[in-house]
Image (tube, rainbow, N blue to C red; front, side, top):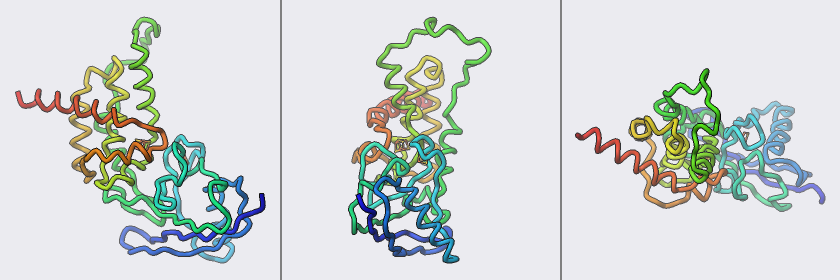
Length: 253
Ligand code: SF4
Ligand code: FES
C-alpha cells in the first residue's frame, strides 16, 4: 500500500493559561504500518528541522501498559479502534486524504500542561488514599493453595487490575467522572482476601478524594466502559457503591 497524504489538525497550547488553538499540518507518504505515535514523531522531526516547536505528547511503554499516551483522535479517546491505546493504533486505521483532529483530554481535574500533555496527578492522589493493603504480604509468603480464592473472584479482580490509569473514562464522560477508574482500583483489592480487611474504609477514602479533586458524579451514561482501552466493566462501579454505602452506614452509627 502506498504512503498516505493526511491533514492533521492538532491542538497547540502553551501551558494552562494559554487559550490554545488548532494548528494544521500536512503530512505526506505516511506508511499504513506506522503507529500513530510514530506518525507524530515524523511530524515532530519535520518541525524541529524547520526550527518550530515540536508537539508535546505523553508516551512511555508504547505497548498499551503505562496509560500515558492519552489523546483524543477525531473526537474519540485513543482513536477509532476499540480496546487499544493510542500507541497501539496504526495508520492503517485511516485512509489516504483523511483529516485527523488530535486534542488533549478535556476535564477540569486534568489541566493541560502543554499541547496534548495533561496533568493526571489527580489519579495518583486517589491511589494514595487507598490503593494498598495494610496486611503484611511479604516475608511470610504462604503457599498459594493455603488461601483458596473462587475462580470467578480471581478473574474479576484480575480484570479490574488491568486498568492502566489512562484517564479515557474521565475524558469521555460528560460529567468528567472518575468512577470507572476508582471502582477498578477498589474492586481489584476488595475482591481478594488481603484487600477485604479495609475494603469499606478504602472505598470511603477514595470516593471522598475523587469528589474533592473535582471529578463529577456518575449518571450511568456508560461512555466510560465503551471507551476504556482495557474493557473495565461498569460492574465495578456497582461494587464500589456497595462498599461505599456499607462504610457510610457504619460511620453514621
Ligand atoms: S478504567 Fe479504563 S479508561 Fe479509565 S483509567 Fe482505567 S484503563 Fe483508562
Ligand atoms: S505509551 Fe504506554 S500505554 Fe501507550
